[in-house]
Amino acid sequence: MSWIALLSPAPILLSKKRAEVVKNIDWTTLAFFVSMFVLMESVWLSVTCQELLGGCFRS
Image (cartoon, rainbow, N blue to C red; front, side):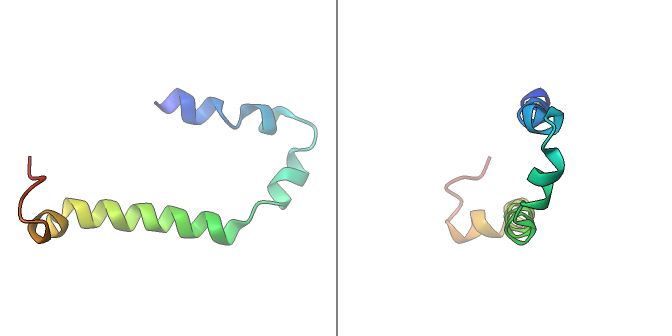
């Protein structure tokens, strides 16, 4: 899985227009999605979500 995450941006990062691509990234939206995934992982690990669902997904 790590290789997929590392190889997928390789064509962009190896191109000559990488500065333009990085400049045009919507950093606010990227930060929002990163923080959303971190929050959801912490909620899942805190068992709050499983207790609210009645233990249906408890492993």
